[in-house]
View (tube, helix red, strand yellow):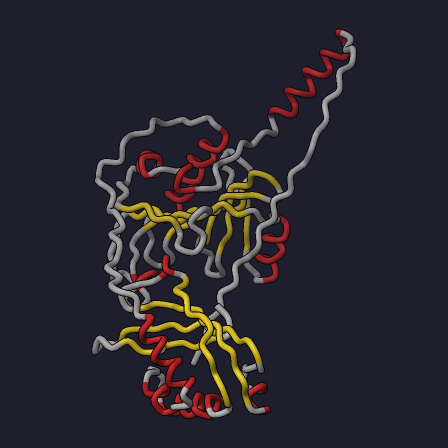
Length: 327
């Protein structure tokens, strides 16, 4: 069975400390000091709350684009940094996907605060033969990136060398045109700099709210029964509870037949925030004794941890969908 592991980029914030000391300043020095302050103020770019859904509201996006927003959705993977603003929303927008997180969608603007090196981002784009340039209509340091076909990929408003706001729209199903995206980015730049040139008006439509899915009862009993079959070395019974195809079941059969003894120490529900009406995950602690070949198949003598994901098939039957040695 396949196990997809998604690793997230680590973001490191570095804070500097400054010391202030008192000293006598002459009138001439005071003049120079004021001049320096004025010069420095010209370089101030401002900043924005990392929680972008909080910083940029539906009212702001509507006022900046003239297009009503029907839904504001924090990104499911990085909810404190990224946000989607939908002009249209359909639960089956991307019908090729089964997972509801990917299936739902619509015409939108996507925004994300990223604490990454701007220079390294440029190097990465150059490595990919992508192009980028400064968009002169945006009154803030920026980088507009383009695909090989010349279409606009995204706009990045650079707050400092290691922090920027990335803004984009749907690829192929555009929420707004490229010129509209550039215009919107210029309005966000004004927001960052605290110098709005337009009035914030109320978004004219009521936002669609996320309705919590009916999860139903925990299916831990399925996990318990599966592990009980393994503990009793009833391998065929355990395989019958898996939704794999025959060749995969045969492979698991070889694996399970290396078990000489298996004792369940603990079963716990995990990742409950990601549970759906048809998917649940459990973490189990096992005490295992295996044949020597079992140690070549992911087992070790002693304590083993496994993550078991159950899924409900089209017939309404819950089966073991994934058995993994990592989350």
